[in-house]
Structures are given as structure tokens and as C-alpha cells.
Image 1 (tube, rainbow, N blue to C red):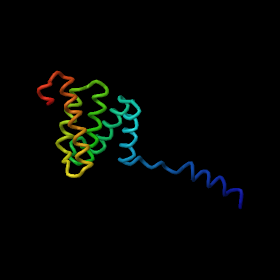
Image 2: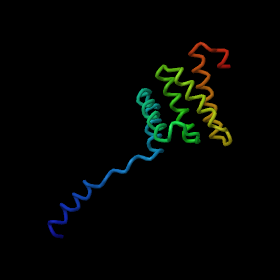
Image 3: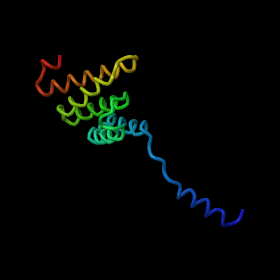
Image 4: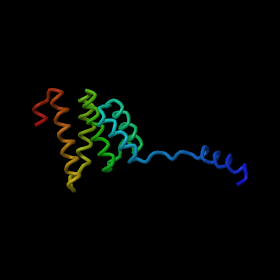
Length: 125
């Protein structure tokens, strides 16, 4: 092979643009942060992901992101913020499939904890 071939290959590899992360990759990364106990970082990651999906989106994906954002807000001691996003998450999770029902149940449980932390036990029941 000619000597000029290798610098061209190296230049091509270096110059190749990185592909942006998919929504699923961003979700998985944010969830990994939450699972690792890095709640503040997870909160920021889920907030950015929700903005990427469109803050007012009513899709199932946006509802799942809101549910996880609510968990992160609870973990960072923001029950008021958690209540707000968890209420929106619950409204968007139908429970039509077993997985949806599980996600909705977790969001409802987190919503009750958010209300309880605000001293609103009557609303949490």
C-alpha cells in the first residue's frame, strides 16, 4: 500500500462526526445515574431529555421521563417539584399493558410519597 494511504485513513477516522445519542441512550444514561445514587445528575439528565422530547408532550415516552424525573426530584428532596411532574406522568400512563401498569404503579407510589413528605397524608392515601 502507498504510504499516503495511512494518513488518509487516520484523517477519516478522526474527522468522522460523532452521532448524537438517541433518546433511548439518553434515557438509559439518566436511569443509570439514578440507579447509581447520583440523583442530582439524573435530575439534570431527565430534565434535558424532557426538553428534547418537548416539555408539553403527552406521549408515553414523555410520561415515562416525567415519572423518572419525579423519582430523581424525590431523591434530591424536592417533593413539590416531584408532585408536579409525577401528576403529569400518571395522567399520561394508561396502564393498558402490564409494563405500563407497573410504571403507573411506581409513579403513583412516588406521587403519594411526594405528598406525604409535604405533610399531606390525607391526599397521599
